[in-house]
Length: 252
Image (tube, rainbow, N blue to C red; front, side, top):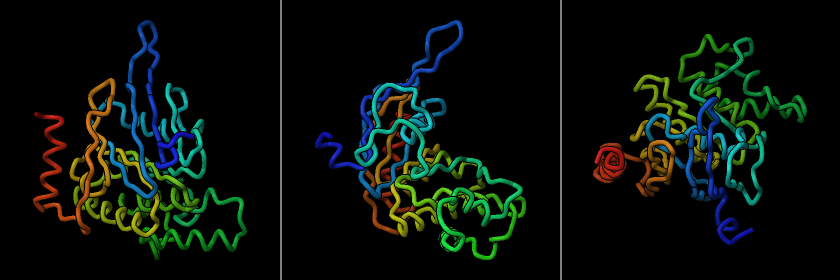
């Protein structure tokens, strides 16, 4: 293990990704991605559609091992998925025939019934769904369903939580509410999080670092540190200045 890997919780080195196309040359999706993440940090990845943000997220969490380069998490090379790495998608992907409690506890199969009930209760409370334990997904608003999806991803106490545009399908008011909720949850759980978003304000509000990606093939164009006092004020001069830095990477 190198010094760099010892100092950082997640290390991505020399990551390249190609997609095979029938009858033509392979499409280069990710080009020489290198960055590191400290334990407990929130990293947001922003970039235009098709630049490889979600592909990068899938490679780091182990859902896609067909790439060049290496990913380490806590000193271990990632070669496939693991229940200790949680994933939240844009759609909540709850099982419609199960209640909130049953969805949250679905993957908890290696502990006693009493332990399972306690963990499910703990994470339902964490995401603010008290009173909806026996509700079905069809009975929840979009934001509430996404909270249940986050609870399901967190219940196994993952070392890293990956979020792929988790609030992209929500209306503006619900999205802001969910951003606040995610910030609160992260502060309580101290979970390392990597989040893909098209929303620059969302990235500035949530992140400790923002990774700005170029158009395809996706390269890291810039990494912007975000050191703002909490709670973050979206109208503050410092917030607006960081937003301008990100915008200028795309439109200057």
